[in-house]
Picture 1 (tube, rainbow, N blue to C red):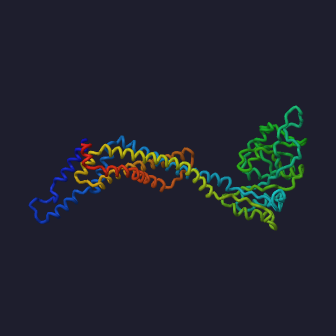
Picture 2: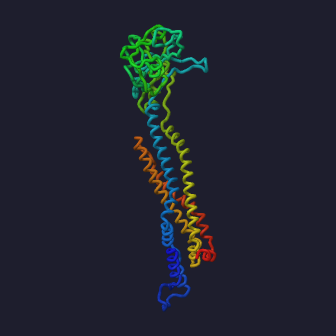
Picture 3: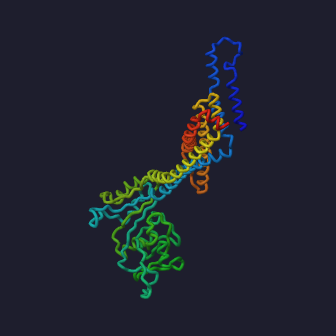
Length: 444
């Protein structure tokens, strides 16, 4: 009420002062010029507009905090969503580069379609050694399924009829570099080497799940498994395979042993671990290294583009969470509109007095629009700051590299002002439409 009386006194004083600001005895200007200059001085200028808006905003700090809370949450949600989406996409892209983007698989090309398709060529048994000479190749290994012709794979040689039959683990032939090529880790013991392969030693390594199925968890006692009636010494157990995870359920033996004991004809595929960015080079030169005369007999699977994956992941995450941020912004905008409309209703007397003393509808509407825009900007600045801070904290906790476009933060802060402008338009028009006589009757 005190502010209202001060406004009333100030406006009344402005209206009764000498319009020209000169002494009454001055006759240098005409009466029309003095009236025109007086109206120019009495006009509600930008300085008065922002002063009145600042007073209206700061008059109730508690209400101001509650009003901008919705905008703060909405803007913070948008910044956090975009920031975490960009950061997560970067992390996924990094993991993608570490696995899929560093893997090339070469298989024999097929001639024909469907069941009648036949391989055009055969991967040579020394194919791994050939491709390791290519620049960018880190490791290479051959893999081929082994047909054990119905023989069971067990950890005991005795076939007990009273024990229910279990599905035997698959048997796979591999070269010495296979584990490195598929990015596996030895858990217990060791992986076989080229010497085992050359000597056709009856040794095997087990995937973790195959070892669990066979009941083998240690190798210090040199346990053996049996494929049919033939014993094979277990020299290691491996796990944490990034590619060809089916090998965790398999028994892997050297290709030389598989060729001797099971007459394996040719490798099924060649797994190649490459450096990032070497995919196109290895895919082009790999088939030539395997067969210079017929490189078209082989098919190289090249890693997909990491950037496209990153964009797709980021788009999917943004589509989900930006919807939530939009809802929060809608709630914030409705909150600003509601409080501004309530402020108009509470200040009907003030509006009527100002209209009676010469304020135009434009002056009244402008004040409430400015108040709404300033409230929205405050909410946008606080929300954008809170969002950036949250993205950084989450990235530090997760040991990620925070990624956030600076224009997202700036644009989000300005978005708060836009929300305030849209939310304050209707209350401002409502205030401008108040008639002075009706306002003074009800407000004073």
